[in-house]
Image: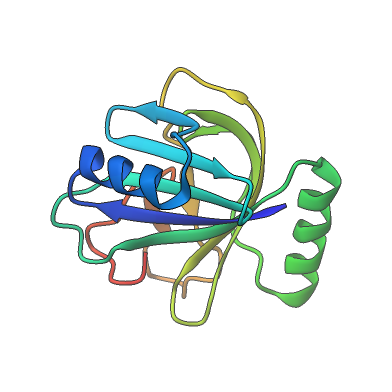
Amino acid sequence: MRVQLALNVENLDEAVDYYSKLFGVAPHKRKPGYANFAIDAPPLKLVLFEAPGAAERLNHLGVETFAQEDVDAAIERFDAAGIKGEQEEASTCCFATQNKVWSRDPQGMRWEWYRVLEDAAEFGAAPIVDTRVDPGESADAPSCCAPDPESTHR
């Protein structure tokens, strides 16, 4: 497992250059408006979204796991604790097909617990739905892991 940190950046080329130098590794995946780093030491999945003018630098947090059992255990734990959000199976997000479960902390920060099944050619558009939203409010979040320009907590 490794922690995921997803950031909104003003200029993707500048950010990729900086983080490549900071961690001493090249991006694992690079697409228009998107890059990710799979860093061994420290164990980190750093995801960069080009989002000029985003209200917040932090997009979301997550835990990348390499075994389906870990995702299944998170789903059970989140459900039992009453913090489970949207559960996705074989959904395409961030140029990868993934199984995942979402949760939001009390201040609205999105967390995902996920496993990559395979790379994908497209970014994806799987909706993120927060099942803890009060009735009458919109539960729909932006597509996939894309920056949410209306939120100050993503």
